[in-house]
Length: 157
Image (cartoon, rainbow, N blue to C red; front, side, top):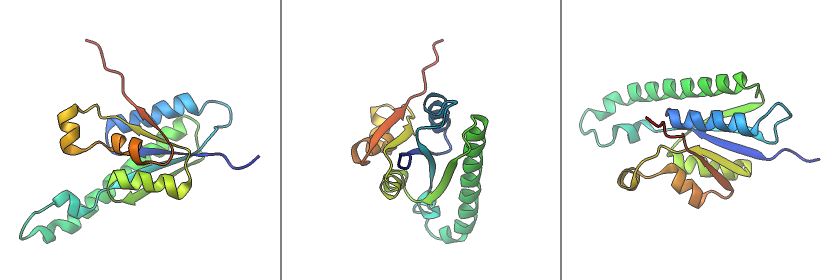
């Protein structure tokens, strides 16, 4: 039998993406040998994309912003590894790739010949999705594999 198919899980620092990772581990990676090789990908924004058009003096803060982004990315990767370990999934690869999440995730699918991409849903409304753009919507239309969008259940009051 050949190699296991690859599943890419996109992760950012939101509770929605960590929920998607946990849901995936609980539902698709049971006690038996996992059916997929798991790759967790975090897209680290560039410092310039975070600062935007800061104007004069913007270059002075770039090293500090870059250091903060590296710290955040490291903590996301560590949290992902802990979650996987707690669910007894130890054969996981975590990649941190600099760039826009939409491109990074679609590129990871191509690079690793993934058969599935899992992303969380922030649950934005139409207006916010239009203004901010939706990573899950973009991936559903552009990734060359099946895309599973995991939505967190709404809590009923």
